[in-house]
Amino acid sequence: MPAATLLPFTAAPSRKSAGPTSSFRLTERFILLLVFSAFITLCFGAIFFLPDSSKLLSGVFFHSSAVETNTRTGTVSGSGSANDEKILAKIRKDHEDALTEAKDTLQKRPEEIKQEILKEKEKVLRDSLGPDGGDVDRLPPVEYQRPPGATGQEPPDPRTRERRAKVKEMMQHSWGGYKRYAWGANELRPISKQGHSSNLFGGLKGANIVDALDTLYIMEMYEDFDEATAWVEKNLDFSLVFRRKAVELGERLLPAFKTSTGIPWALLNLKSGIGRNWPWASGGSSILAEYGTLHLEFMHLSKLSGNPEFAQKVMNIRKVLERLDKPHGLYPNYLNPNSGQWGQHHVSVGGLGDSFYEYLLKAWIMSDKTDEEAKKMYYDALQAIETNLIRKSSGGLTYIAEWKGGLLEHKMGHLTCFAGGMIALGADGAPGDQTGHQMELAAEIARTCHESYARTTLKLGPEAFRFDGGVEAIATRQNEKYFILRPEVIETFMYMWRFTHDPKYRDWGWEAVQALEQHCRVEAGYSGIRDVYATSPNHDDVQQSFYQAETLKYLYLLFSEDDHLPSDHWVFNTEAHPLPVIRRDSTDQPHKDKTAA
Image (cartoon, rainbow, N blue to C red; front, side, top):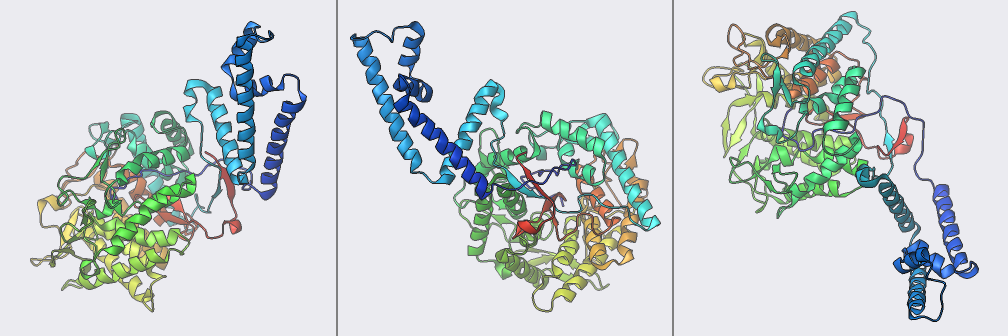
């Protein structure tokens, strides 16, 4: 779902296979220390056995300006002059400094010595590359566990295979329009055939390219993937390749956490490092779905970079939340980052709150189900949601209402429809005998969200729908009747299919495909619609970047086999970008690549 996350992309797997490598072994450490010891011995041998060794030592190790200058001019050889005494005094001092430095070095731990060698190698490499050498990769090598299923096999069923191919064609059509008319822009206006951007992107360019990278790869559109990769490398102002870009962006986001509580600001100027919050957000509060939707990305960044600070920042958010009293066990959408107190008591599993709950569950899954704190927080929160927010209409539709200061608003947003998939994903780990109940609840929410589509004229769901005034699953306000190509309903269908294999979920997804083709497809791509209850579509002329990143990806996976991005190896972030599960014991994983890229 398109909640506002701070990290828009992750490291993409390489399509070109790499040979198996291993991490830094004990024998390699030993060899490194032997080489280093030999180097030290050679240097000390020079002190005692080479002619004019003191001059050599000071010149090589300390670049003594006096020695270098006088050697070039030929004035060192004289004796008895005041200048010679100065030079000899300088040599003696340099000699003593060298001995002190060598003694200090020999007292250091092997790991410290290794790190210093690596830093020195990087410095030498940067210096050798000149002023443009600042992009040298300074990240330590990491053992990358490549989970299975980044691409999948053709479905054996002919009808499913045909539907999957159709979704890929939709991606090719939407991507082709973007390439032709809006390349490098954040989004496409498919009717006016030009680029589009909103203030959500700040100064970022090419958001659509970044957002669509993994969809291109998953659908095996490799030529387009390579072209998009080349654009990212050339135009995105972070560094040179995906891993470094992700880590550098993460580092530039860290100033957002400089608040009294460590709860980050919603908005950050990447140049100045100055943060602020949305002015409309309850007295300058941070928003639950923003500061609560960083955990997967920042844990992954710590894994990529070897820097624990990213993980520490998001774990601190947990600590702050755990200390707070929660009304009825619920998490309000607003939290003041300076006082550490809740703002307005507005609770929503849709906009402003949605992905916080999703990330509690997925943090547990991403940790290979070792993060017990996240697991407890998720199931406790789900219980509070079921008790206080989930209701059933007189017509038998289960929905998730919003809570405002103790009063329920019987409205469910399109964004909230992701919850069916979330509950299904977490049902297997539910406490006690709740697994069956949670799968039933997930199925009921999926049905309600399907009804919100089926009850419109265009068979596409509204932005929000209500259960009051005698209506059920219908938008009653004009500003809730639009459809902007959102993915949440399709996301739930995909999860429900994978966990139940009930064919109705694929049929419901195909209904959405047909409606998208009939009402949203235009010559240059796909457009949102202003009123899904109108007899003919009035297009808004925007192809949102999440249409390719999420909607089409979830549709493609709905018609794919279960071994394509399997849920026991991959976790989707809130923008449907897959991240690998961080295994407790990485040695048992089949695909190992060591990468510094």
